[in-house]
Amino acid sequence: LVNSVLGDVQNAYSAVLYHGENVKAIECEVKSRVLTDDIVKLIGNSTVAGGNTLKLDFEYQAFVLAFRCCLDYWTKAINASAKDESHSFRGAPKKWQRISDRMTFQKMLKIHKEYSLEFAFAMYFQKEGKSLRDRIAHTEFVSAGVFNLNILGLYFYGDTGRGMPPE
Image (tube, rainbow, N blue to C red):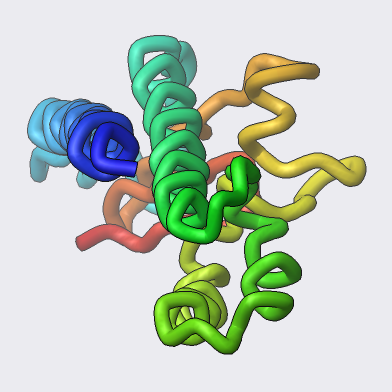
């Protein structure tokens, strides 16, 4: 239990932060090089889509995998207090409901319910019955997405098809 919380979970969380910051740094670098008045004026009402994003893809995939590991390590640590060796964050509520007489697990159920939608990208089925994490780990190379530049700014369109508006 102690190693899970003070070692595994904290180290995995550090990896999440590390890769998340790397993704943010790549995005900022692209913005600083691309978003100039000259380029925006030059493209006018057109849209230009960016190509090779491998460095971003690598960091994005590492972020997703580290995120999922962190959740599963945390679940394993919580479950250890009930002498349960399961580790699946996604499947945790079923186990926790069976032992919900303990205050810890009642709190964990509340946390899971409140935040699990925020973690959906790494946890729940999205495409062809697989989560993003499962697709990365088992079936395909998942790109972080493509940059699109137009008169409104720089947009990033990722695997989910939802664009993120410029800041």
